[in-house]
Image (cartoon, rainbow, N blue to C red; front, side, top):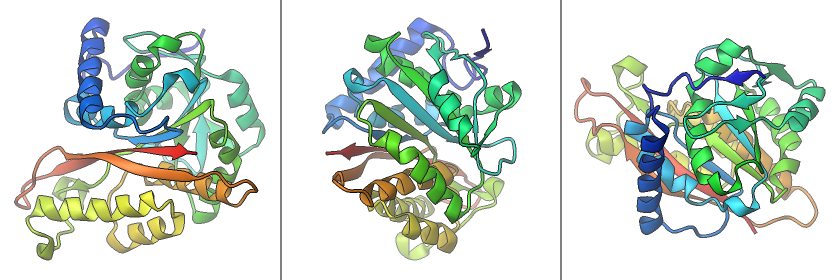
Length: 298
């Protein structure tokens, strides 16, 4: 059986299953105490950096999930290592985690592949991509009571035009409309500093780290509006280095597609946590921002 190895375990996060379980439990407990679940999330946005940086923030998305309702989890992550025109699917049967392996929903992957809108990832591309892997331990942890009763559908997202965003949004919206499905959208926010070739700074917004937060929150506010066109315009105006902008745009396109249908569901997306890896105060500094959100359909 083809198993995608947990290639980042032991470096980006703990490889010892018992220690990792305790760490995730602690972060989830802290998130529950600070931001209790408001309703069962149909989709979340969560970061994918090393757990030492983004793990506590990610808990504020994962604690919004009610595992009892979930049978299938789509994981949409941006491609960091290969150029990809459109989206790609895994060819693996399982994804390994230090907690337990996660089965791939082969039927859904086959259905998506049949649309001819998806490429296939090589095993090397699959195992190198941290934007997918960093969510697997959290998924395994939050879904531990449902072990053996759920599966995942990893989707690697590449470059997308506005038209392609709408196409993928229309295609995937039927899955978002199904209350037994969950979407995990993988994204960090602003990558700031010379090493990222991005040093946008508005002094009227305060110190550099305050300017970064203001910039991120402008984008987060638009995402909460579920407005794909405004989000594209925001990215074009500021060039904010949101690495998961394309997966986020697909989520926004899915929500817009649902709103165009009869019996329109009520939707609400809310950001529950924001953090930065380092409070930048000079151009010698650098940082990555993290944000967690949940989308609820009523």
